[in-house]
Amino acid sequence: FDAVDVIRAKRDGGAVPEAELRWMVDAYTRGYVADAQMAAFAMAVLLNGMDRDEIRVLTEAMIASGERMSFAGLGKRTVDKHSTGGVGDKITLPLAPLVASFGVAVPQLSGRGLGHTGGTLDKLESIPGWRAALSNDELTTQLRDVGAVVCAAGSGLAPADKKLYALRDVTGTVEAIPLIASSIMSKKIAEGTDALVLDVKFGSGAFMREPERARELARTMVALGTDSGVATTALLTNMETPLGFAIGNANEVRESVEVLAGGGPADIVELTLALAREMLALAGLPDADVEGTLREGRAMDSWRSMIRAQGGDPDAALPVARETHVVTAPRAGYITRMDALSFGVAAWRLGAGRARAQDPVIHAAGIDLHVKPGDAVVAGAPVMTLSADDPARFARALDALGSAWDIGETPPDSVPLVLERVT
Ligand code: URA
Figure 1 (cartoon, protein in one colour):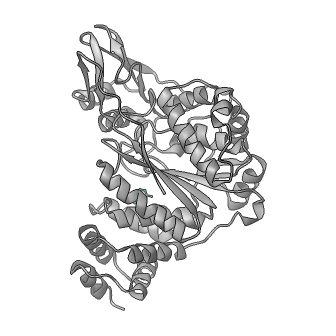
Figure 2: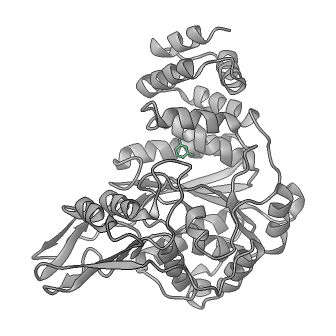
Figure 3: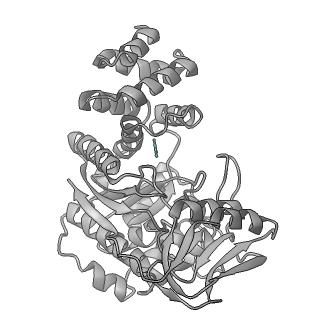
């Protein structure tokens, strides 16, 4: 086959035949198809789309580029969760131990943050001693003994995706539904989980701003999972406002531990419970008492075992930033809006995020909100505390927050956090 023919077929709006598409992915992974050619192909896909069969073949080809894991010998059902990413999204931290406390195995292969979205591994690395890299054997042992594992995806899973995602990142071709769906699902199917729950976000802090686009992405991914034998469902959830009160790394761990102790912010608890119910239903436990278990702190043992198994000390003090800056309300009223994207950018500028994949994050940096939309404030009341090691960062963060939140005369209409289920 010839890469130029494949590019032309997609450029002209046609469907790429199965054998050609498989060849293109394989040849690209091996270096026979050049980055420039794959970038042109990705742009053609972004502009002209792919039909369901093409998306399935693309996903299968990416899976075939690497290893396939299997947890078949474990003797437990495995259920994973994937979030398309947001601001303040620490749900994996309470969720994985909560679900594991019911005897279900949760292999949560996770990533790092990039730009304004945080990464689960970065958050957990604020716990002294905790390590993200596990061998496949360590992963299996921990799944058997503890039940919950949050670790870095090994480089053997879908290497074609790794190469293609890096290329999309620098060629303006990230936002194509066929490419996002095949990228996420190739890794999840190769991981070998029995079941998968997707948290597909919409709103200012999400990949897909519009609920309609998020719904299309969710449907595409659910179909890919189901077609390949992974029981898959999705929730469409609101990412217009940061989740919880903490945005950063160490502070998000603190907030997650509060949730595991039976407290924590209402939105974090609601989403954790909604996703846990989905995961446990797929694992054959639709009547599990997730609410009682979380409220009574019974998932905390799983959390502590999970952190210890990966070298972390669950009782260690978390890092604290050298400097803080409190933002206060200029007048009395109700908080009407907090724009997730702007808060994500501000936390990133404080040091909580990274601009390039190889950059470190500052675990103690971030934002702690004191109020959320709907709350009343008096003039001078603290609205948020910014934390950073270098006070020079405050001005740049405040710049991002300039028009990110409002105070009005009346509280805003409340919006549902979980919009709908996609099956
Ligand atoms: N996350 C992924 O893993 N891939 C994408 O394409 C987008 C988000």
